[in-house]
Amino acid sequence: MAELSEQNSASGESASGAAESFAAYTAGLAFALLLTGASFLVSQTSLLWAPGVAAGLAVLAIAQMGVHLVFFLHIGTGSDNTNTVLALAFGVLVVTLVVSGSLWIMANLNANMLPPSAIMEMQR
Image (cartoon, rainbow, N blue to C red):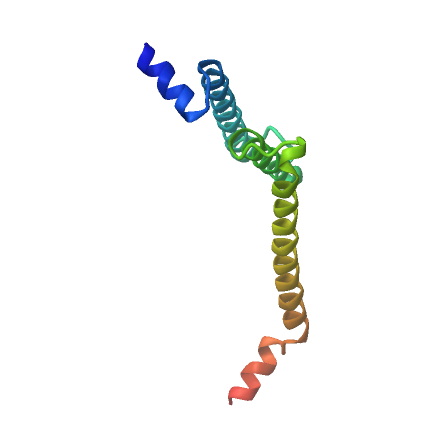
C-alpha cells in the first residue's frame, strides 16, 4: 500500500484524484456507448419520422463529439483551457472552410458541366 501511495505522489496524482479520473472516464464511456446505441436505434428503426432521421443522427453525432471533448480530451471552461479551446476553434474553422469550399467547387462544376447527351455527341 505504501508503494502505491509513493507512486501516486511521485506522479503528482492523489488516490482520490485517480478515483475521480477513473469515474470520469467510465462516465464518458457510458455516455459514448449510450449515444452510439441510440444512433443505431434511430437509423435501424422507424422511431423517427423518415425525413428526420438525418437530423436526429446529426444531433447524436454532435452530442458524441461533446462527450469526447469533455470526458476524454478534458476540454472545459476553466481558465487553464483557453489555448486548448482556441486551438480547437481554429481547427473547426479550417475544417469548415475546407469542406464548404470543396462543396462549393463541386456544385459549381456540376452546374457548368455539359449534359450527358452533349458529351455523347462530342464523342462521335
